[in-house]
Image (cartoon, rainbow, N blue to C red; front, top):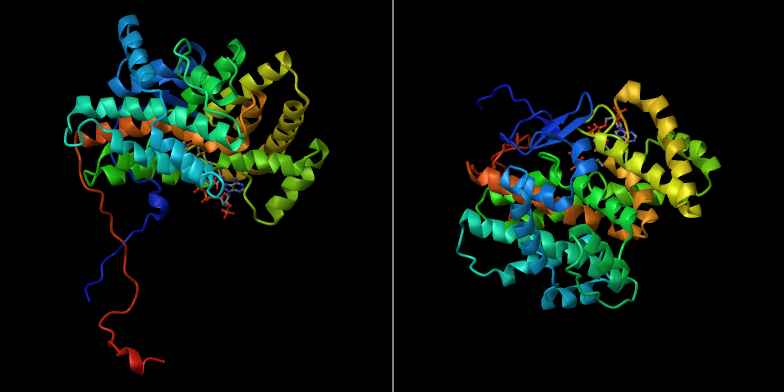
Length: 385
Ligand SMILES: CC(=O)SCCNC(=O)CCNC(=O)[C@H](O)C(C)(C)COP(=O)(O)OP(=O)(O)OC[C@H]1O[C@@H](n2cnc3c(N)ncnc32)[C@H](O)[C@@H]1OP(=O)(O)O
Ligand SMILES: O=C([O-])CC(=O)C(=O)O
């Protein structure tokens, strides 16, 4: 048989799949831009609705455009009836990301015209998905706590409304800033695993709902979106800040991974993790809480040790998921909702990448190198051992 040199790129490491104007990541220097704007500038000055507009339409909106976009999002905030049934049926038995994935998939039944493949119709779908996914996550949280549905409040912006629908309380300015910050920081990140998965599904010309359902399914895993919850659970297992070093040393000796550390692209401090850490410290200074103080001490001690041990040798630094848990706990978000919130925030990134990819679509179909036998003899079932 013909043999030729084959190079296998495990995990597609180092392979470019498309050109994009959505997001640039400088992994060596720990820098990130959305459509050319540094993430630090957007985190400080912008808001999730504006960032979503920027990602979907390629420019920052003027006042009129932003206001019209906000109204379109607000008009889509209601949780549709089927979602109540799915959440109520699945929540007792399934992981929140399984529930969310099923809810997202179900939204396709409410599409006004599934045959309309125009850019305008796809933007309409993206707006529906962004608005409704946040409301669904909030209701999932309510239901899990045995509490009633809180209808959306049209006086609040997207992320503050999310927190209101989750907690039943209008967030103060600082809590509203923190949740909005998390939505901004999670909105987009190049061809990460869940976005890639969205593109693979979309490249078959399956619809937007199918593609983002694949994205949500992919986000669940602890090597990707699931790391935020896993990192917080690790901090709870450490319990007392004085146990931190022993716990980390033992985990590393046992070849276990420390969740919230390491990244395929960043071989430097993830700039989003720096921002989360900064706001977490600020919040804790202004609104000290015993739980967050303990989590923060554990996180900072774990960070110090991990940097000493692994940053220079293996290029392992904190990623966005490491400080996310303590920050969410500061604003009373339960751990099982961290990854669903990531999905609600990333919905815009999934959609924006999909629409960009469809401008120049090509079916994803890589190769695998067969290393098994060929032309084996078929043995009838009765003659097999
Ligand atoms: C939003 C996000 O998705 S950000 C990423 C969230 N995921 C996590 O936080 C999970 C923990 N991190 C990891 O598992 C990894 O760092 C990944 C999967 C994110 C990226 O890893 P990759 O670039 O593929 O690195 P790879 O898995 O090849 O690891 C390289 C080396 O670093 C080690 N390593 C990587 N991450 C960690 C970690 N978190 N803790 C301890 N060691 C680690 C590996 O064991 C390996 O060591 P070895 O060379 O001695 O075998
Ligand atoms: O880029 C990645 O591989 C993972 C990540 O940080 C993200 O999706 O936000």
